[in-house]
Image (cartoon, rainbow, N blue to C red; front, side, top):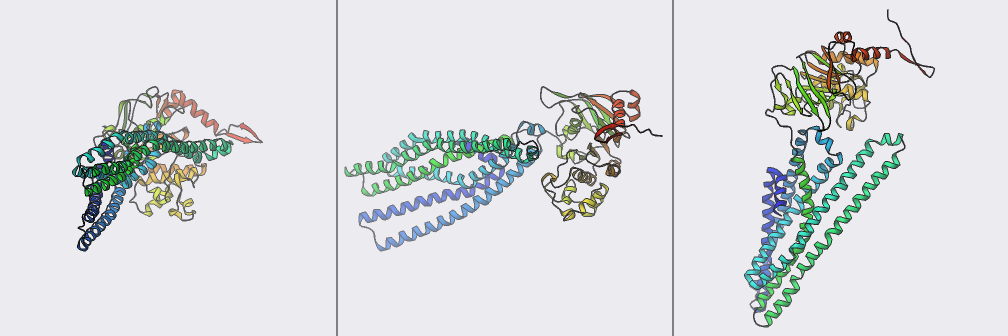
Length: 590
């Protein structure tokens, strides 16, 4: 139990100390509860002894009324406080988890399914909030009240106190077993929850593919099966805990009849006063009620403790180490020095890569798919850390700088653009929230997206949907280009950014890129070699190594992979489709 409490405190963080006050109110309520029993017992004793008077009735009534009012106030204040403070703790926890997740490398997301991560961020946090705001204080109250009642029991008659203690000690293994079973079943149940989340996400995201290939029935069966598994595991959990929990409650309930029988026998022999006998029965009733409550609360606490374990497992994932939050680079030249990188131990993606991108120059990365081009830009962004060697910007190792501080100096335009479920305006200024609307519109015009934005129902205030689902691929890409223009960072990373654009707009977008890239250190991944002929340096990446390097004209003279692919792409421009047949015609330029 101490381990469980430590985990609750650790997950709650520094804000967890705010729960002390409402828990103390709950314990004070237990003390007053016991006080009300004491008043009632005193009244019964006076009746038995013939000492009950109208004056005493008034006193007892006044005392009970005061205690009742105090308990009502304590109960309402304690409940409100634990709800408010618990909600604040959960809000802080969610923000803490969000910041922590941002600090993890992409390997964490490759190793763990979206169902697992979603279960932590939704189900586990929700379960932990339930434990914190509805169960924790009641659990503490039940333990405290039971301990207090035992003290009173020993104070009344040591034999009675010892008997109750022996019964409780005898049945505690049943309670512990109920908690162990609940904890074990929680692990299985959570696996089922992860499966449901993963299947739901897969079904929603892949619905187009499922429809096109007639897989909707097959995939829905998998989704339906995951729901049935969750139902089965939920029932199993309840049924597996029930025998232990009920056995504990039934046996502890026997404290009442045993106290009645034993007390009656002792009293008839003149060894126990009638007044004491009544106190014994009253205490037995109170202990039995609280132990029954504990029988249901403890397994539930163990079940919810699994949520705390899952949250801690995520918090214990090691973030990227760094020495500086931000860095003031003397310049923005990028250098790779003997860099090797593996996503897993078995596969080496980059092998001893070395190159320098001087400040204010453009370096293009070309080569076959899977050669390691995107990995290079991911390492510069510090989505991963190198396995061997080092990457420096302005002569400073990027591993010394916090990832957020590093990416502040970068504008990135990916081939696969993700937009926030927000307005067009907020998506464009995501990298620089304080810019004016006029600056946003100027960037949009430069990126050739102003016209189609103005045709939207609410213009720049139109919601684009999750991931930009309401926009075409080309529209999303242009908005991401406008976003990069707004950020105006000294390092620009581009990943085949014109692939979703039509030929008419490509020339205008390239002019926008000229503005974006002016005076910046640019790393660009290109598949269409005609778009990077003006680059200062072109690196041909093949099999994780630099196979060729040089300017466009230098690589053409070398007669290697670049020269061959460039000529093939130039010839491919002249392909035409006519009369249902693919024909290649060569247009001679004069």
